[in-house]
Length: 162
Image 1 (cartoon, rainbow, N blue to C red):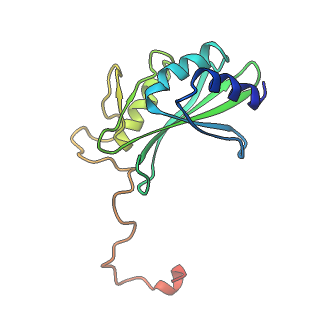
Image 2: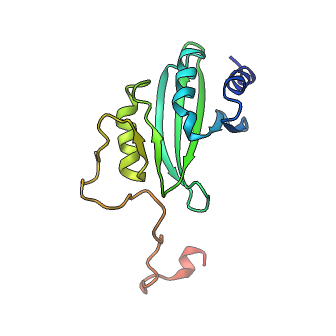
């Protein structure tokens, strides 16, 4: 299965929902609108035989309008083909539909993404924190805090290339 075949099939079915396609890296990457993610996952699983969800993770781009992203890695094991699907949402309304009905393995991965990035997966059977304490009121993987303490006086900037 070639990238061109996959791109044509997805573009025919999801014409308005495909935002961009990238073939420059080793894995075909398709960015789609968040409202079509469940339909796209069903299509990829049933029509193109991408029946293994390798990974689902979050990412935070603080300088973009839609800052929170969810990245899905799928694998067609029969033809040894991989694909990456990305979708983005805002921090103010971080809702994306769950895919646990399509891939049972998404259950843990969606909970982890919620725990660290605050992405709310609508329809998830038990969306709770799994690695952080439940009373934590922030999401630790978001880039919302400065990397360095500006009040430190014990470091010499010459050693850090400044």
